[in-house]
Image (cartoon, rainbow, N blue to C red; front, side):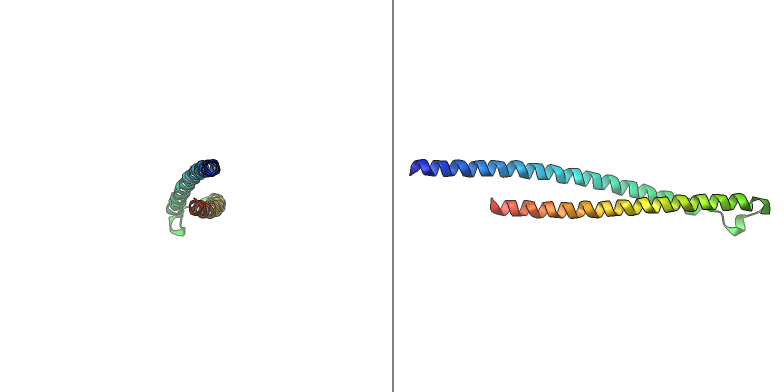
Length: 119
């Protein structure tokens, strides 16, 4: 009987050790995800600042002094518009990535909570 109890305790300790290592692994992965999210948020902030700068430096009709410069101005406006579109597309990709990472983080937190309940 004692031998059986010792075996059961050994199994429980093995399971607990395994669970602890898996929890540590999950925590490490969550930390990496949070780091990536912080990086994406920083990049998004930089893009917002760039867009703000572009908006501030855009030429208005009142600023146009020489009619001969209009084709060059139109070209610059088109280039800026394309740049803004690319930034918006990149921002949308980042937002989708952040959403995915958030969902993964929530799923992992739920898994950790289940594991803790098992322990």
